[in-house]
Image 1 (cartoon, rainbow, N blue to C red):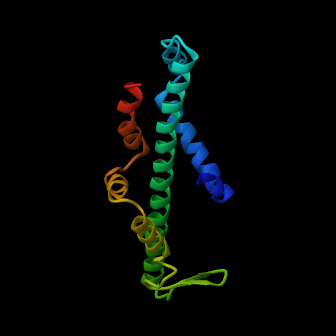
Image 2 (image 1 turned 90 degrees about the horizontal axis):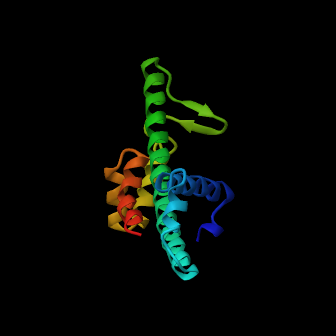
Length: 148
């Protein structure tokens, strides 16, 4: 699925996946864990399971940040529009895009967040709603990594 995403989104996902990997396996942790296994089959199975967990964490982190950036964009646009209104200026333009009151351009991030959330399963919406920092998402997966 991620292979079909635009390059900037793939790059973001890969960066967050890397963050997750290094959060789960700092320094020599991975090397020490893999040494516990005697056969190549056991090592492959461990590696497969670890990568599946890291992939999932990377995907959730990507969604978490997308949602955050969408909402933050709207918060910032609202703040800017309100400041201009206090100065008796009815909105502003960036290129051909007009930001005024609570028009669709001002609310675009919130609308994108809502559309994203409508496509997600309820358990994932709950995660992105309840977590405020990426390390909290990492913590959700630590136990599964530790059980490997």
